[in-house]
Image: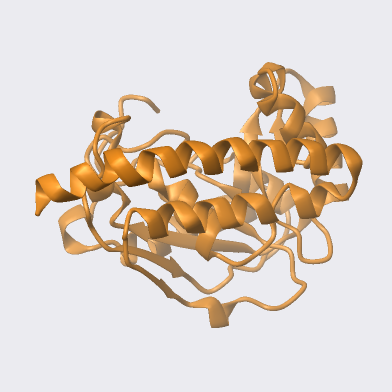
Length: 252
């Protein structure tokens, strides 16, 4: 069965994956140039991600959608198990959101242009003026249900276990007084961990758990720390027993 699945990936999935990827890049780039960046920056990517997971025949379970309110903007924070985290969140969270991205990505050909036009949030920490510009852009963008998704570990795990959470996403949520929603991803590490990038996908179910929102209790360092700690505990609580517990990530 293992080798039949790999043959299926070579003959069926790979050609369709390449075709779908080319089309979505074109749709996002042209659509965002001509019109609504919030629509074209999200909908093609959502359907691309959904199609990719379906092509790989990976079952998906989503828990906790009832915890989210319509038209409320959130900062979603998730553990980072593997490459399929992006497909899972994009395709199955069912919320229009932006990614928090390093400012250096703005310089990449095509990707940087499409990300700029689709209103992704570039994080620039090169001084107070740059930080303020990041907050101002986020304040203008994250309204009327448009949310933000962040991997606060900043790097994919080597072990399936969680590393540390960085403060950036929580400081932004504090500045904008937005609720933080922890997301727990299970299965992505089994499907394609970072040690097996660009190799065959392993079949394994995927689960996305949407936790209760964490609302601000004030503003400042105390709120940032409290929200970070509560979000970390929430994400950890829904991990499968095999990957419970903190393990240092050398990339952090």
